[in-house]
Length: 284
Length: 314
Image (cartoon, rainbow over all chains, first blue to last red; front, top):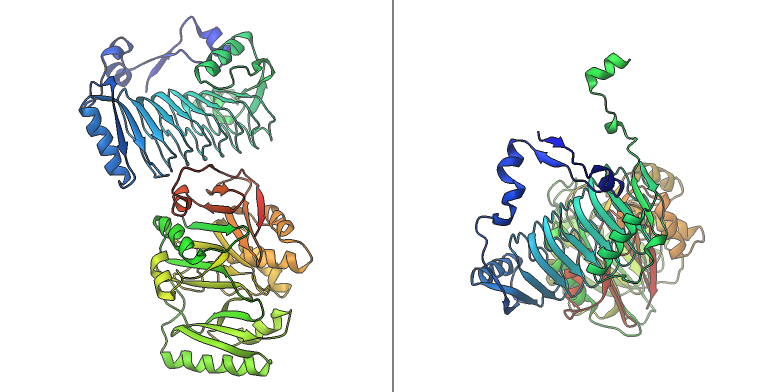
């Protein structure tokens, strides 16, 4: 179990729903020493040149074949790959742990771009359920709509949908930012633990249900609040951050962020009781 | 898991048998225990088309038994006799498989309840569909297998819904396969993806009101529930909206009638649905790849939201 050591930035960052705890502990030190992050590469990743560009038509390929070919092209140094005719196939672009510019000329099915760490992706179409699940880092931009469980359990990176998304967006997310240009369905931010969600349009019922932590910003109407989701004051820090983020996301740059509603966890659920079971006995 | 698909052409007919086969085959990984088609074909609208079975195709977990073809013959004879007694004239008769038949019937009635009760009083006989446009065809296997077995790829019509089933709540057999006929309404059919948790409570209430259940598949409840609300005077859309609170569980389902196609999604949006809508065509399915089998080009699709009900006319 990692120990948590807070920094002096705590008050400002936490007021915005951010976290700057430095995780320590044997496992964290061994694998994720921040000072070594710049030199960190996954086993089997490639040095790619973003100016080296190629097309890949996946019309007659299965998803494993297409993904294997993407890996093959990266091994040849291609840093920009344009995927033609994805035609709603499932599981395209999964498990890319590399810096890469990836462009899909069309729509993806379920589980597109799952478990990725690092690529910059643009999807000129729609995506199905569970897009970019477990995203660790990078940027994924969807030009049209997305299905349910958008950005499930992401830990980092920016996930942007310019259209509307289905239910359970950001379910179980542990970090990163999800930005939606349109509306979102029910249970948005369900059980989210960290990170931030920005919805410029309306959102469905049970918003932020059972969220542990993190922050949700809503520009439109809210169907209903979920258990333990409460509103909080929108600070000037929040507004500055929202403006920056929307600009970077190429979405809603002129949107009036001052009218957004900020939602955080009320932290009244049983699991936020600070007492250990043995301490409870003493208190009773 | 199960997969559902449907499409409706507005203002024209098309080869809906072949189109639906492609959509359902694209979803076969969601279940291929059985596959069912509800096809709304081009007919002159004068006579009824009755699809019925006189026996079962028995798969894993089914409570049905394998029977000799002579048993099927005996049941068919009684069906013919009852039809004659009720004044129904068989215009055309097709025995597609030993246990599966298609009759074109000249019959003057608007109330199919007594008619159906009489026919289904014969043990082992079930009317799969009764209508002037609707034909429900369902059997074990994936979409292509069923399509080939029943020669469905030539069926021309305006709309269709279908189901690729992974059996979870009941056995692998035809009686538990979708679509379900909205008994006793002519030309009403239903397919469903999900689980209903208040099946038995609703079933008891509906049976007390005279409605019939032929299987123990929870999805049949939707067809019966909608049929009952329509019996009480509701429109199709009103019945579907009532189902959002009347039915408990997770569901996405389609209902089709002679001239319309509708979809409903539960308030938790727990089951998937992707929808494409244009002036000429509406196509929807559990996954986008189903729609891509009829529209391979880049298209605008979206997921309907939780608690959404939509109905389209031909």
